[in-house]
Structure formats: C-alpha cells, structure tokens
Amino acid sequence: MIESGQDAACSVSSSTLMSTDPNKSPKTKWVEIEKYIQLGVMLPAATFIGWLIGHLLDLHFHTNWIYLVGLGLGIAAGFVQLFRVALKAGNE
Image 1 (spheres, one colour):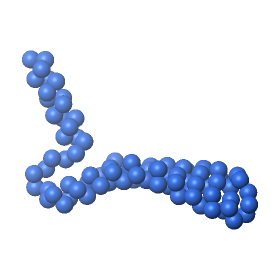
Image 2 (cartoon, helix red, strand yellow; image 1 turned 60 degrees about the horizontal axis):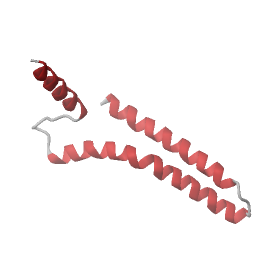
Image 3 (cartoon, one colour; image 1 turned 90 degrees about the horizontal axis):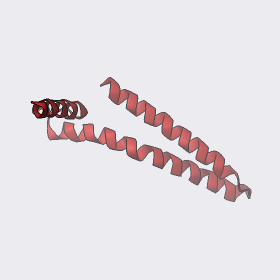
Image 4 (cartoon, one colour; image 1 turned 90 degrees about the vertical axis):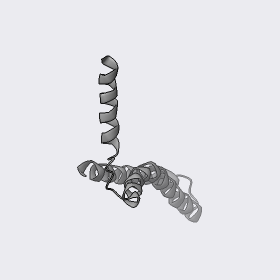
C-alpha cells in the first residue's frame, strides 16, 4: 500500500514537470523543452560575452581591469534574463 502511494506521488510530480497531453504535437513539445534548455545556455553565454567585450576594451585602452566590469555586467545581464524566462515559464 505504501508503494502505491509513492507511485502516485511520482506520477504527479513527473506530470507537473512537463505536460503529457497526447493531443500536443511533437513540435509543441520541442518548443516547451527549448525554453528550459535556454535557461542553461543563457547565463554562461552572457557571462562570456561580457568578459569578451571587457577584454577587447582592455586591449584597446591598454588597461587590465575593464574585463572585470564587463564580466560583472555580463553576469548581471544573464541573471536578469534568466529570471525573465523563469517567470514567464512559471506563468504559463
């Protein structure tokens, strides 16, 4: 009897992670999966782009500290976008 309760809890939690509506097209499911993949790619990409811009400015102005500003701005931009996508996914 305990096992059936655990199975029910597992089936409820797995259905809340991704909707298993059989009427959805495979394309709709891939779009839904893409939203979650975007969360994992966004933060490292924004961090790298911020560092890269800061590094290029360091080379141009012959300094060695601007990359830290670019890195910080990239991390901040990544988190802002991460929260935007997460909130939008939470509302749906």
